[in-house]
Image 1 (cartoon, rainbow, N blue to C red):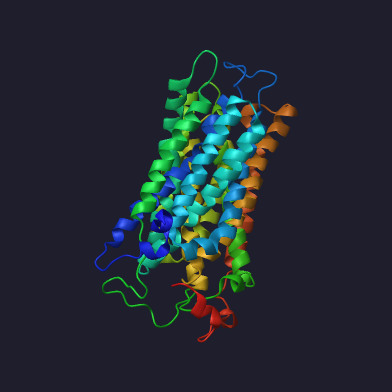
Image 2: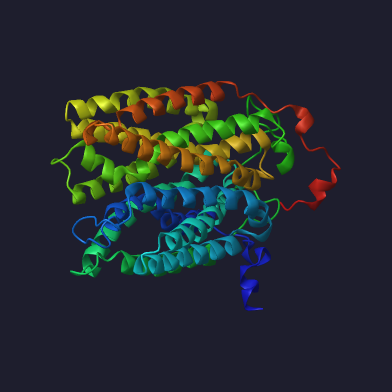
Length: 458
């Protein structure tokens, strides 16, 4: 069959294959699905689909549009959890092919929703179909890269997930440019932009699927010797995927990820609108789009930087940095609005978003340290339900507290202050959860002769 090209057996690397060919394949996928972080550039234009120059009575509100991003993140986590084992067993090529198809269909269905002014179609398209593409695409190269780079797992996951953070750096200006090109006096060009971007992403995700490879069983990098004894918080044993759910370590790291993501994802989802409202007259729509792109650059760079740092200082210490520094910066953000310092505001969020991105790229290596390498892809997929929860909690905190504040007479420029203090409080809770993480008890380790070991794919 033609689709046999997608089978895992067809992706096993031949002797002499250069493992550095795999990161570009991962980037092809993650740079495309990373567009999700730039979706906020569509929010304000989609509040004017009928009014064109300003919102009409029947136009959608920001609070309604905010659910598009949230639904997509919910289905990202759910699909990653449901299809985690399928991705491990079927291989990265089949997963990347499927993810690219779902991601593109999400854009095309959303375009129909814009044409017909049917918000539920956008929820279905970008939210559900696109979210499934996000989840499968997100986890598809992670386990593969950890296997290719057992000597530097943090750096490896940083390379894989770096592209997801950097996707908005490309997508944000591209989206604005396409909307300007497609705009006419009777429509704002959102639907045509969705179609164009969907087709572009289909090509690149399938290129990544074509070039990705998995290592042959037993392969090791030249000169690499696996550690014989476990280090502190780094195991040499494996934990079966469903046994991992029975450990307190899984759920502590679940909350660590959830709280770290909640504190950043709401800001990313409304970054464009928030900067324009906090600094009226100082930040134009084009400048706000540039801010979204800048955040994407730090999101991307932070994923590689912090994940690489975690190979040196450890995952637990890296998360301590995220929560401690992030708490201070979130408390500082409202003060930047009071003094009208756009530069200080931007600096605070660039650091915050670098640590937000670093949290995503460090957590697969954290899981590898806790539960071993054999099932890390599937366990990682289940952990991403924390992202689903944060995908609702973060935007809801930002959007609805903002609306409540404005309805009670608070100026738009100060409507986000309370939310920033709440985010700082959430990071303090995350700091406590991270401090409680200990090594997994040996009773959860797979034993020699376990039937699940023989059945598992390496």
